[in-house]
Image (cartoon, rainbow, N blue to C red):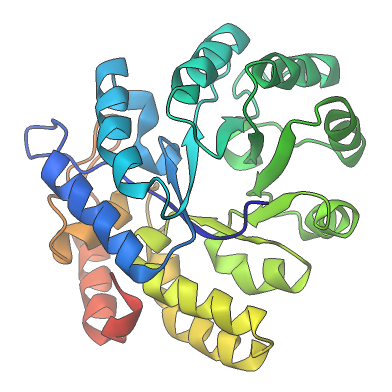
Length: 294
């Protein structure tokens, strides 16, 4: 079963916008030192929609050998087209990941029968799937009934990355399924709430910067030291919030730049963050306990 803190890894770029292999390697190594339990490659935080097929392969060729046998690996493969999603799952299956991350199709917002058919098609490739449920980006909220049908008809669906802010629905899902599959918190600022209702851990963009803090919080919570875990959370919470001052991963890229992990470069249509937000982040980085940072 997939469990623990999984870092949603960004893609470092050089100033000219090309892939920065050296800092990608450094970032992976820092995550391992921090003790994360897994890494998600080619997710939203990686700016995957702007990566070429050649670059995706290069990222996997660099990262998978560094991670294999040390942590669990999830690789993003979902699109809003079933044929291309299946092709992506087939391509990443060569790397033998622990699971493929498949987002609910965005923009075209499939009806229930179409959504189930989409995951059935991806499941036929033969590797476990994690559903990426992020209504804020896709425009599609999967109802409890559709989720029940989906899980019944697609047994290869072994986990959910939950980015739903409807905590009533999240709680309902957790009560029904958290003991049966890997139910991941996908909203960094809600990690204590998710853990308290049975989440198995987090798939976290903020862990790119705060991996040691997230791992320590998770370990404290699992050891039954919930008050200590929340006390730690209160220390890292302001920087977690800062990760999302602007569209992910723009602020995270700036933080990594300040911490010596390459440039702050993101690819269009994303752009550089404002001077005001840079100043706020600079102050937070200066004042946070450095043991929480990579």
